[in-house]
Image 1 (cartoon, rainbow, N blue to C red):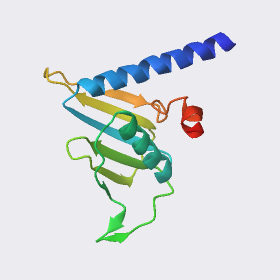
Image 2 (image 1 turned 90 degrees about the vertical axis):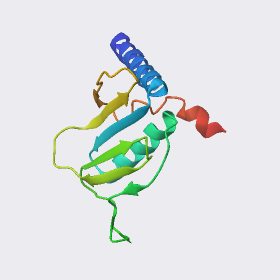
Image 3 (image 1 turned 45 degrees about the vertical axis):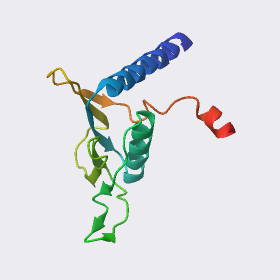
Length: 132
């Protein structure tokens, strides 16, 4: 039924807005991306850092002593910290997929949300962006 799909997208929008609000008010953002492939993980990292206006540093783990390695074709875990903007990519053998989101606010309360859909912040206005 079309009503259930529209309520799901409404819930996703609400969840995305909550993530944005927590990120805006956070001192530090950490997240872990569990993705099916290296490319999917890197794409999610780009979307999440861009959509949350987070600093972008270096992506570690894709070289051996400075020699580039191919992006993993299998599942990856990418750990990100907004203090440095750096992310660390490694092969991942777990079953989870999605983003484990940890905003650090100034109130001493530990908050962690997940696993959130990799495409949660990938807005529907991609069509608008492509027109410009």
